[in-house]
Length: 203
Image (cartoon, rainbow, N blue to C red; front, top):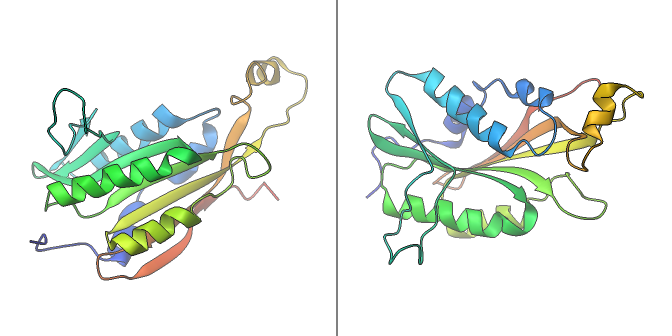
């Protein structure tokens, strides 16, 4: 049974556009926990009827941890699960995160869509660039509503200051988000894609 007010692609986009994505451009490094907090804050800001389950319970009840998958967040509305959220850094783990979001959809009829934020850590020349083509195909084949949000990062080259020395203490601290794009697929098969924010100072 489908939720009576299942969201269409343009409605999903309207929700995402309410988030102040440019703020993520002020976060350096891995940003995983910061992005989770960012999404939770904006969801709660939307309505007094919204709530967040952080460290979300698994959609599958198994023996101890066997067979269980837990999303980073469950965004809830009126005490129903509305949007399971995964924020993933490593490209090789995208499939597992997609599977987890799909299981939430299958377990809770109130789920509108899954949200996968992709920060795109991979070795080689495509490090921190969009790596979402395979997941797009999985979403299409599953026919489950999903919003993919993908960021591009650049390595910050600062002058020889205390700040730049701090950023260079490890490899990931000197990376900064400069662009955030989306791809949305809804339950009836509509696809839309575009940009949520771009640092206009980066060419």
